[in-house]
Image (cartoon, rainbow, N blue to C red):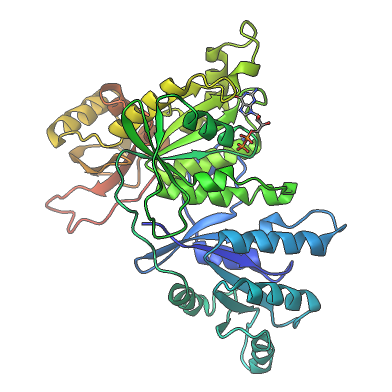
Length: 449
Ligand code: GDP
C-alpha cells in the first residue's frame, strides 16, 4: 500500500510540533538510542483504526536566522505542498490570525491540495469566537484542537482521513522494486543514469501507475527491476540548506514502496549526520537494504581500503550491521553488476522462511549456551514461529515476555543469523506469553525493532 503523506504547516509557535507528537504518539526505535544519531522526529506514522499515513512536521525546517524568514517559510511551504497529499494548516486561535497566516492560506488555496485547518490552543469553553476567526481563512474543514491537552485530536484525525486520498495498492511488478535513497549530492541520479546507460540495460516504458508515474522499469542482464521514484531523484532544483532536509520526504515515500532499498553514501565525504538520519528511516522501514559507497573512484587506492570503510560504516551506523556494502563509481560505471547481484540476493533473503522445528532448536541451543533468567526464573522458550517475511519476523512464546533485555534479544537474532543470515534484512522478534496451565489467555507481546 502506498500511504498518503500529510504535512503540518503553519507559522512558528502555533504548536506544529506538539500536534505532530500528538498525532504520531510515542514509538520505540532502536535507532534513537544509538549515540551520534540524532533523531529530531520530523517524520512519523499516524494511524487511525486501520488507516495509516506518513506525517511531516515542517516546523523542524524553520530557518534559523531571521534574515529572510518570510521568503524561506514560503519556500518551505511550497515544498511541503509539493510533497504532501494533504496539508494540516495549524493556526493559533488564542493569539488570533496574523498576516503571515493569511499569506500561508493564500498559497494553500492556490495549491488545490486538500487542507484541514487545525485551530489550535482551544483549551477551554467559550472559544467559539476564536473559531469563527479561523473559519475566515476560507477552508471548509476547520477543527478546534488543543494539541497540548490532546483535545479534539481524534476528531482532527478523522477529518484528515476523510479528506486524504485513500492508500493506493502497489501495482504488481516483475522483479524487485528498488529505491535509491540518500542525502543530496551522494550521486543518486548519477547512479541511476549510469545504470540506465549500461549496455545490457533495457528501459521499458513505465506502466500506468495509479499515482504520478515516477518509476523506471528496466531489464539488466536479462533480469527485471523497477527503479522507484526515479523522476524525483532525477529532478534537480536549487534548494536551500533547510529545504534539503525535506528531500527526506521523498526518500521516505520511496522506502515505503520498495522491496529493496539502496542507501547511497559518498566515499569522499564519509558518513554525515544526514546520512545517519536517512539510514535510520531505512532501518525503520524494514526493507531489505544494501549500502552503496559511491564515488569510490575518488578514494586513492592505497590509502583507504574497503575494510576501513566497512569498519567506519559499522561504527557510525551499527544498527545496519546486516546490510551488505557495495562500492560503486557512477562516474566510471563500475561496481554496478555487483550492486545488482547484491540487490537480487537481499531480495531473495527477505522472502526466506524457516520451519518452526528448526527455529525452536536454534533458539533453544542459543539459550543453552547462554542462559538468561529474571528474578530467579530461567527463560524458557515454548515455541517459535516465523510470522512474516520482508522483514523476517518471528514470534516466540516465552515465560518471560517483556523481561528480555535488548542485548539478549540481539544475541538471539545473531544466533539465528548464524545459520540463516537473512543478509540485508532486519530481523524482528515478537515475544509472547507462553500458554501454560496457570497463565490464562495469551496477550500480544511487545514489538521491538
Ligand atoms: P544526487 O543529489 O544524490 O542525485 O547526486 P548527483 O548524482 O547529482 O551527484 C552529485 C555530484 O557528484 C555531481 O557533481 C556528480 O557528477 C558527482 N558524482 C556522482 N557520482 C560520482 C562518482 O561515482 N564519482 C565521482 N567522482 N563523482 C560523482
